[in-house]
Amino acid sequence: KLQFLYLIDAASREASNMKKLFGFVGYRGMVGSVLMDRMKEEGDFALVKTKFFSTSKPGEQAPVIDGEQEELLGDANDVAQLQACDVIISCQGGDYTKAVLPKLQEAQWGGYWIDAASAKRMDDDTVIILDPVNKNVILDGIKNGTKVYAGGNCTVSLMLLAIGGLFEAGLVEWMTSMTYQAASGAGAAHMKELISQMGALHGSVADQLGDRNASITAIDATARAAPLPVENWGVPLAGSLQPYIDKEVEQGMSREEWKGGVETNKILGIPGDSAVPVDGLCVRVGVLRCHSQAFTIKLKKVVPLEELEALLAKHNEFVKVVPNNKPASLEDLTPAAVTGTLNIHVGRLRTMTMGPEYITAFTVGDQLLWGAAEPLRRMLRILHEEGKL
Image 1 (cartoon, rainbow, N blue to C red):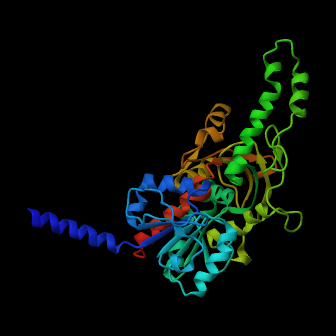
Image 2 (image 1 turned 90 degrees about the vertical axis):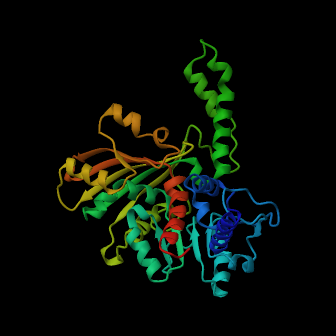
Image 3 (image 1 turned 180 degrees about the vertical axis):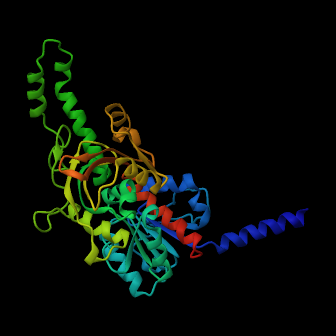
């Protein structure tokens, strides 16, 4: 019996030694923290041996996970340490990717790079990953030797999960997306500052709110005059909005809006001469988590709404079609309804007065999951399933 147990233990140790080394950079930030939680929930760490990396605290104790790992943090700027990894997930941001990945490639590193940042998305050597929508493109990339994979823009990913059925059926001639993007899309510091702004607003009028004789116009005037912290946002977001996200590019378009067209077509593998026009306006609103979008879609042909709803509902397991009535919309088409879940809700589907081939829709999803962390961990799984890890 003792010999049998020894053999089992030896086999277990041998299997552990055979596990590929997974490097995790940027695990403490907003996206990295969500990704860490999801990987723990889904048992992803059991597939690999993990080494956590830090740009600021190498050599310190690494976080403890339920799986094989190295105890100390690696140096995220040490190419030699990174080279030992078979796969790296980076949630450290685009500047880090631009600084480190070229050095790894120059050193002939043969591992896989999976990135949350936008730095590599539109490069020819990179596949944008959203497997419920483009797993065929991802598998082709693996087969053809592609080593760099990047998560897509948050609103683009959520949009394609919501209405991917229409693209799959070849029905979309063009579309617009008007976004209502949450504070968390800008990072943890911005999210905290929005909460501080909300607190400052309330604090400025707390006494008046308790005074039955105080007029709403007086309360409003006090709130408007309240000084709010704007170190991160630059301007107030609480009780307001920001009609411009990211830097200006061309034709009055913001970079966030530019991503809508170029990333949609790249994710779907649509060549430039057949690209589907996707445009719109991106707006930041005072919501903590979850992005919402309003679509106008020009169809290539008239399709009954019931058929459109069926196409959407069967496209992937995460989408839920919400009936276009007020109670259902207020119940299910809000950030509060989907935050912290993988569910993508789409509703307000109807034909428009411009003609029966024009439809509108509204969708909401948690951008910290499908718009950031979830495609990364699923890509790790795909590499394992394909025998690359």
